[in-house]
Length: 250
Image (cartoon, rainbow, N blue to C red; front, top):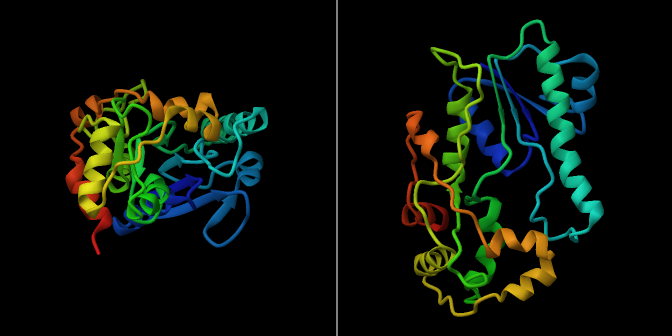
């Protein structure tokens, strides 16, 4: 297939590109800046999509960006970065004489775990220093997914269907294991052989992240990948132990 990826230069986009290319597919990025193997969002808006069989939109400001304060300006950027790119891509697909047979919009997944980025990149340093601990009470659900499984789900969703559906498929990007933040914290500590005795109080997260954003970490959300499993997708890392061992191995 020829696959166009919006926001393909990020952590998930790089992993998805590796996977697709390993399967013989061609990849073109939609980016803010032109370059080899890239087209710009302005190009897509004015000229439409290049010929392709699949499209993916990963674009969007990171809601947990520690360098951005939680304020109205940041919230507008969050919405605009997702809604505007999705609008451009959707309009380009709708107006194409040969639209892709499938397109994937990634709108919300669990904490993405991997060796080269994602949630683990922010967590590993304090854990290696022995400063890791639970967030808030620790009893809240902590949905997560290994990046290899996330990009696997995306690639799986891009595959042509024998019986195409008029309704969109919704695949939750989370591992089948249902873990609490406490369980995640203790398993990561065991994996890297470090203590996890310094909990992060909820009020500290409220101050540092903003209460509206902190609630993602302090309350969590119980999510299961029911349709993902029913579709036939097989997880490489269905449990925390296997996922964390792969990530922190030397």
